[in-house]
Amino acid sequence: MTTTTWNRRHILSLADFTPDEYDTVLQTATSFWEVLGRRTKKVPALQGQVIANLFFEPSTRTRNSFELAAKRLSADTLNFAPGTSSLTKGETILDTAKTYLAMGTDMMVIRHREAGVPLAIAAEMDRLGTAVAILNAGDGQHEHPSQGLLDLFTICRILDPEKPRIDLLRGKKIAIVGDILHSRVARSNIWSLTATDMELHLAGPPTLLPKPFETLGRDRPGKLVLHWNLQEALADADFVMTLRLQKERMTAHLLPSLREYHQQYGITSDRLKSCRPGVKVLHPGPVNRGVEISSELMDNPDFSLISQQVTSGIAVRMALLYLIGVGRGR
Image 1 (tube, rainbow, N blue to C red):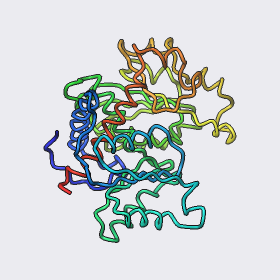
Image 2: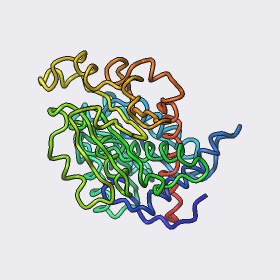
Image 3: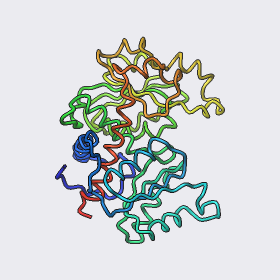
Image 4: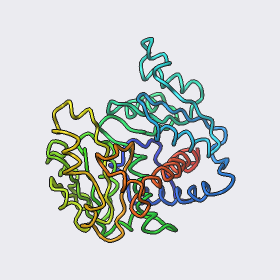
């Protein structure tokens, strides 16, 4: 297990993560990846601690991944469902968080459709003088830090399974394709992937990839480039990440049709021919088959890392909970 000092209590964004922090997460996740390969997949690292999963919007992968990660670390878990909670009776979100605080919660994993809710809860916990840690599991169109970290871990493990580290991205080209505008996953990946000297190329329709996204690449070690032509973004790419196209955007008239989107921006085996040999494809899920990516490519183990991303998610979320719960000497 990593011996690096960890001083971060809340994980709300990757915008201010340092290379050392990225490497600490990657190193710790590697240790837990090995644990997940054992017959006995449980360690007592967080025994006696209570982790509350407060998911105010639907989630399958992230919620189950955090819950399993907590259980693998021997923590006690509390799961929140808004439809059967006191929110339906008028209780505020902050009062809900305080209720879980009173139950002895040590960490809260927060997901909400509005940006800034995890930050507001973290600020309230700090104001109250508690030691409770807050992990952002996705907030509105802001960020999804654990997804960005698991994507980083998945990529770096391909480059060096024994010692994944952020410097492995130097000189690499990664393309992210799809609905960048509404994607919290894209924002977290922009911060993590440009933390070192590499090229990150964003591609999508102009309505889903506005030019102001270029400003996110300013003063970053990595180079950020925008494309409205897919083939330019894919040329010589080492990795391609395609994002879920949210079908509700159709009603906002941001796209003419799903069929036309796939014709112009869908990832297929033929389109990958312009990438580097050995190119790998990622998708944070859930996937709209035949829209963002072809079914044939999604199920092809020579290209697809989608299943590995799910397993990486458990190891990375174990690492985050461990670093907050134990790495700081709590």
